[in-house]
Image (tube, rainbow, N blue to C red):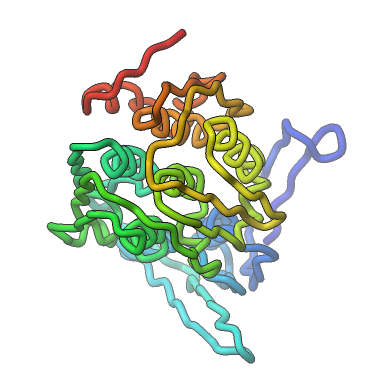
Amino acid sequence: MGATWLGRDKGRLPLTLKGGNLRGLNYTLPMASAQVKSAVLLAGLHAEGGVEVIEPEATRDHTERMLRAFGTEVIVEDRVVGEKTIRHIRLPEGQKLTGTHVAVPGDPSSAAFPLVAGLIVPGSEVTVEGVMLNELRTGLFTTLQEMGADLVISNQRLSSGEEVGDITARYSKLKGVVVPPERAPSMIDEYPILAIAAAFAEGDTVMRGVGEMRVKESDRIALTANGLKACGVQVVEEPEGFIVTGAGHPPKGGATVTTHGDHRIAMSHLILGMAAQAPVAVDEPGMIATSFPGFVDLMRGLGATLAEA
């Protein structure tokens, strides 16, 4: 697009980026990444000729929705090529943003933790208000309902271009399911907490097509599997996924789980400990603040016992 950058030590940080006089671009994403797509679209606001991003696999569309909320035209077209649907997102040049009121919806990835706690702790009922219900983010909720979860969505409404609603979870007897691999993009960050729900379910929960989990903040497939095994849960790890076999009752727990500093691994296993036969500890709880600084206080407010060793 015409930007220049100077890096040190073979392109590693720190680097200096200089923009100005950007050119339009037709860019095909080499892998599914809403972050890269968003970066190109936002740069396109100041590019001569506008930009087009081509997605072989559709990613989260929050940026497109937010740009529209600020008065920008974003053209999205799905084209069928062979057996695949390719998405083209085009941002015409010369557009101006207009200020607007923004109500930030609740994050589905964060809402997942108290909701799953509500499903596995006997006698519980938890409602999380104002959760984003964008169809590209709700795979976990669909999967939990397929597992037999008493998970009810109410008060659905539009807010700043996004659909939101209130979600209530009540303690439920869960059963194992096969999660369709094509659902993975809508819940890729929620598989660790889904695995916790699967540990309390009866039967196999099969999660495949999630190899991306190995290159997140940690190898989340390996760490989730290892943590569950340490808590007495049967898990089969595969290159692109894993299978959790629940016995239909609380696992034994009692382990200290290695997290490698991954906030989602830490929170997921702490949720497991709230309903396991014995408490569960994690080795690096401080990293939870990466995405959910209020996690401990929130869970304590719901009645959980969380203590620092």
